[in-house]
Amino acid sequence: FDMFVLAFVERLFRPTYKKDDFVLGKKLGEGSFGVVYRVSLANKPSSKEGDLVLKKATEYGAVEIWMNERVRRACASSCADFVYGFLESSSKKAAEYWLIWRFEGDATLADLMQSRDFPYNVETLILGEVQDLPKGLERENRIIQTIVRQILFALDGLHSTGIVHRDIKPQNIIFSEESRTFKIIDLGAATDLRVGINYIPKEFLLDPRYAAPEQYIMSTQTPSAPSVPVATALSPVLWQLNLPDRFDIYSAGLIFLQMAFPSLRSDNSLIQFNRQLKRCDYDLVAWRKSAEPRSELRKGFELLDLDGGIGWELLKSMVRYKARQRLSAKAALAHPYFVREGLLALSFMQ
Ligand code: ADP
Ligand code: MG
Image (cartoon, rainbow, N blue to C red; front, side, top):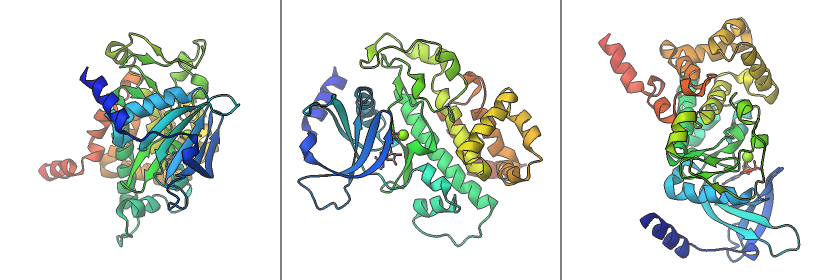
């Protein structure tokens, strides 16, 4: 009862918008299911480039609005700040869903990882100043560790809410300039199992570069009409049984891998890596044996081997074939890789 009243009252007092309230700016992206623009409010032209983002989405927009509404009530800091979503059917075209977020910043993790200066460009963003410490593996590791922790923190929020994102990749992780942290965007392929909204799986939406192997098991189901979320009695039991959240953990593990190994950052090299890993039956240790001689990978292994190989240990427990052998986001956050003080105390005692 309280939940619904609160949600209703909250919705009542939030500003509502319609099509004509927005002035379109630069196009930020275009996928098969929508177009994203930077926009500003028509009655507030002071903001030059626009401090909002608009996604005009096809029929999938309905679920994306639902997911964003849920996120803003349950785990707001995990994702880009959602403002409002509505059905736009005033024109003669097919109906569109319009989704509005606050503009979080110019750079996604994908943009930042493309820079030769990565991960130092991220350090500058997070700390807002240039460090005068010498550059080197230890420092790079510390920055990467911070990024992985922020991604896991955001994922833990989503998963604790019952939402599986299913499209975790650097392109869907944005650096929020205001909070100086990474946030997740693009809930267009997300599912919610816990509350009982089970969106019909649309595996064709999933990005094969970052998808965990179990997608191929699920995709044998026939896709059905996508327009209506179907309420079913799926719930924590199913969650426990299938551990769908571990799908995102695998994707996050691949991002960790790409950050550690500069030569695996391009699309092509990631696709090749996936092929090699599959040939190794998804056994990272076996992959390492075959890849260790490659000189372009040396630096990455060195980074992951720091502090007794604690980074490599974490990576191995995220990128595993069986979902139930992967760590949850919460468990990963408690991994010694992130517990610097704990580690120091431990080495002091030894
Ligand atoms: P798509 O379905 O096209 O992948 P996304 O939601 O991922 O849509 O958004 C596309 C792009 O728009 C992102 O990669 C990012 O560059 C930009 N973008 C999306 N949301 C925001 C936001 N809240 N703030 C700043 N940029 C954003
Ligand atoms: Mg996207």
